[in-house]
Every structure is written in C-alpha cells, then in structure tokens.
Length: 318
Image (cartoon, rainbow, N blue to C red; front, side):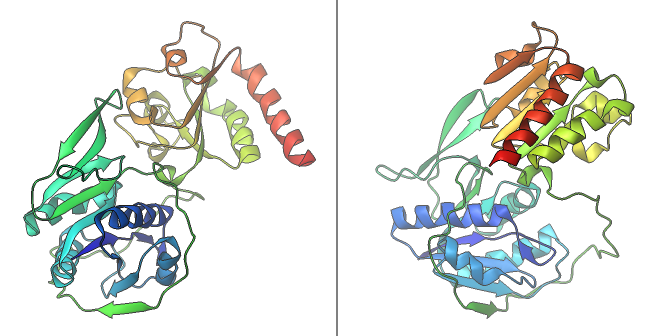
C-alpha cells in the first residue's frame, strides 16, 4: 500500500503547488504508515527535487507536456493501481479539479475536494474542507477503499527538509487524446495569481485605467502580483485573467491588499481565505472592512503612494 501524490508542473518545472502537495502528502503518509510516492506526467526538469519535500520515490510518466485531463487521469490511475495506492493526493487547482473527478471514477474512489486538514484516522478516515465560500467547515468521511483528496493551496506551506531522489521512469499506456493542442498562448506575467503569496488588487475606486500605475507601483515595491475586481475587468481596465472573486480566480495568498473595492459577496467568495486581508477605502461603511484584518479609511490617491514610499524605505533599510 502507498500514498500517491500527483505533482503539477508548468513548462517542465514543478510548481509551488506541487511542493505544497508533496509536503501535505508526506505528513498524511506518515499518519497512515505508508510510503509517499510522487508522480509527474511529462518531462519535468526538477522532478527529483520532490524528494526534498518528502517523497520517498519520484516516478515520471512520459506524455505530452500539454495538459489533457482525460489522458493524464488515465495514466495516473494506472500508476495508482500498479503501486497499490490507497490515497491519491492532488493540488486543488484548475488542473487538480479537472483530474480529481475522473480519478475517483477510474479508481472507484471516494473524493474530498478542497481539503484543508490532514486525515483524522482515529475512527475512520475524515478530512475537513471549507464550504459556503469559507464561512463554515465541513467534515467529510470517506469509506471507500481508495481515497482521492485535492488540497487547498497555501494551506500547508512547502517544507524542504529532505534530499533529492533519483527519478524513476514508468510507462502507463497513453491513449490517443481526443483533442490535439496546436499551440498555447499565455498571458505575460511573473507569478500566476493562484501561486502568488502577495496580491495587490484594485477596484472602481481608481476611477479609470489611467490611474492604475498607483497600484502597479505598490505591487512592484512589494514584489506582489496584481489583481482586480470584476467591474474593472468587465470594463476593460485590466485583463480578465486578473479578475479575482467567486466568478473569477479564487486565491489564498498570505497577504491580500484590496484598494478601492467595496467588497461585494461575490468578490469576497474568492479571496476570503487569504491569510491576511488589508482594505483601503474612503467609505467607512464598505462591506470589505468586516472581512479585513487591517483597514485604512482614506483616499487611495493619498494613502497608496505613501504606503509605496514606506515599503521602499523599509526595504532600503533592511
């Protein structure tokens, strides 16, 4: 018996989400007295580094580096059966979501998605997950022989306290994909929003795209990714891939700074799992203040430049 963790990669390099998933899997495997085996699909240059985060073995299956949920789920399921995996761990990302349901069907497994706790095995197999946009916790009991878990990002920080391991090649059958990827065009940017630990986000309080440099300067000073509310994306001030919220990208950064955003429930649903929320708004009645850890009531055109200068001064003195 073993625990299998699927390690995502981007352009042939393991992502932050992969290291977090392996760290979680290592802790879960220890609790279950199982070896922790990591699997990558496609050519991954740093796959052996997964050993530093707790993988006893790292397997690599040959496949196209273009993600295909149906194709990759089939390969992962084959490997899971070969090593007699009783638990399969994924990251709760767009890729993990595309794989989790397929794997549960292929393995006849119970599925708990968006998990934010280690398994409790004193009486059965139970894990916890957020529900109602993070307003409550649900305890899920899985009674199937095989369990599939997808783990929320930024819940279990990646910890590298081991050593790299040799990568072993495996050859699960890769069926002919139904869709052929001809090309992939990616939006430019340094860190994808779901991977970012620091995010600075803006809303209609900026009054127009011509004022967005105020936010960009703060983000640059902090080394943060940039985001926006839905109205900002809908009006074309910012590209849609920066839209965060219930109808956009859901994020869980360590720090989320919301500037000029009122805090509608749809926006909060995608960001309220952030570790620390800072709100800057001139309206003291803005709903976002109820969810904030820190709030500044003031005109963003005055507050944000001063904050940017303070960040630069602090970094210059360190």
